[in-house]
Image (cartoon, rainbow, N blue to C red; front, side, top):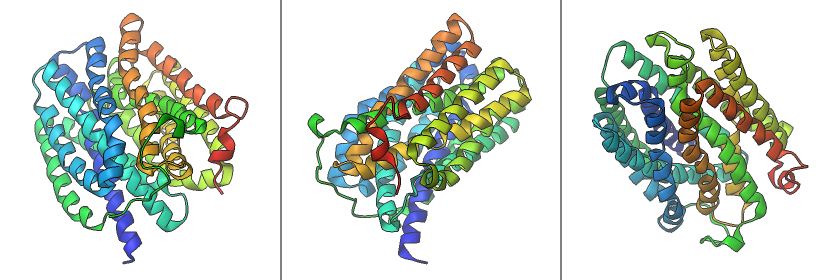
Length: 386
């Protein structure tokens, strides 16, 4: 097997494990909500812990990856991430789970920047855009994790045992994959981050990532609750919306690179925006099982391109090192995860979840507006894929 293919498979396996750990947690949120007796508002406040942890780690994560290399930091994060997942499964109080979620966010942030930096290096070896395929593997893992979560719920297996099985799998895969990871990251002119080094278009990409992550966070954290409270799905179908979303997100990411090469980045963002907005509005206006699933399928297609395209353009188009450039975009984007959970919870407490999801549809529409030439005249030349 060609050495570059081995490296690509190794990095893909790390993306898969990241998605599997995250989706394992997301698929059990309704169960843990019931276990701890949380209201929608309390759950929204609790889910704030993860993006807070991510943002706390963000200022140093890019620096750590640049200084010590994405391989070293990635291996460390890949071992700690499932350990924290176990802690979340065993948490027995609001504050214990909040602390574990914050640690989950911190580890996830270092994991995210490390594996995306590895992916930028693999892209350079292949000489073409393949970032979305890595994120497609992450989404495939999310779909797999959602299906596994539904199975565990159906078998009445507690989250603690579920998360233990995921952690044991993760440890074994990391031990193997670490042997084939890139030892040298791609380097750019700047290895440190100062504000004057940041191109304005990089900040605009970050703003698009913010909207994309806010929409993704809504689906990750609230899709199960939406199907439970609004769609009123049977217990075995509570995860159906999440599974539908993750399945089309995965499929979309496997074809996204080709579509971006054909349409250009700006049009890809615009089409993504339309799909996100339309899918959420369908689920809001027609909240029954079939139409809600159909709407979530569209949202999955829509969100599939936004984050990988943003990371790829940032890592390859900036004068900064890939780790720093991705950290900048991720820092801005993660505010979407930070704001999203409490925003949805607050609106749901004040009105209802349907109104919350309608507001997220407007955020999805904003992605297309930000990507148009009239709103960001400097964005298109930087983002066109040759």
